[in-house]
Amino acid sequence: MHTMWKGTISFGLVNIPVKMHAATENKDVPLRQLHKECDTPIKYQKVCPVCDREVDNDEIVKAYEYAKNKFVKLDEEDLKALKKEQGDKAVEIMDFVKLEQIDPIYFEKSYYLSPNEGGSKAYGLLRAALEDTKKIGIAKMMIRSKEQLAVIRVYEDTIVVETIHYPDEVRDVKDVPNVPAQVETGEKELETAKMLIDQLTTEFDPDKYHDEYRTALLELIEEKKKGDDDHTTAVEEKPAPDNVTNLMDALQASLDKAKQEKPKPSQPKRKAKSTAKKKTGT
Image (tube, rainbow, N blue to C red):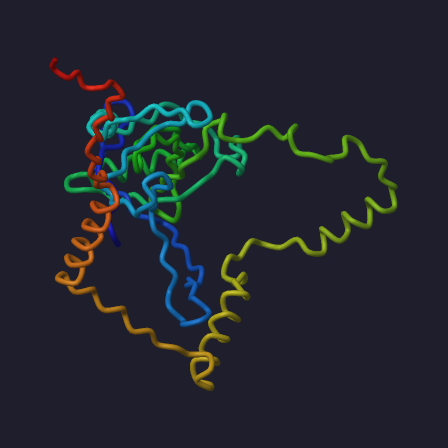
């Protein structure tokens, strides 16, 4: 399993060297976009609308838009230093709480923790303490340039990190439109609804739930792949242009531009005819 992060989890005077691994994976079926006319995959380019050309990554700087079309540019060195300053800190468990005190709306992503070299004993100590007390730890840590609030808990004998949203990242429910305040509910209707819930109540078994759309989509893809050629295509990559041709095109374009910008030669000024009569000698 790929290691995403290495660091130290600490609580009190106990330090646990750990490795972090992604606990979940996205299994959405990736679909590409093709040009309908020639079946070529569509590319997305970074283009400057003012310079009217594609820009490379080394030409791009990061900035924060503090007002409409007004930015504060941030140096990459400053961001790296800030990231290192925060990343060097050990992940310290600040508080211990009960899991049921945290609403699921706060949870974001799950990661497995495994002990790093020399950390097995301390890892086992934290795991046993969390299991016996039925508590979870609240900590802060840096993941992908962002300081995350996180829950430290045990899942099937493995310590898990659950990143959770900060309170200001959870939108106020008062902003949700058209939510009724109080609705008069008939006693008979309510009892019927409760009976239905009781009939459908069972133990949670995650293995009984499947992504039926993903399964059907994969079956459809396989069916079309084995069928007629109208639904399959192969695209050859466009050969890279010859550098000599590129150079000649650039030279010709520069020459044409120079001709257009070259100032026209000025016409010589004509001498004005004198209206005065020449004086003759006597």
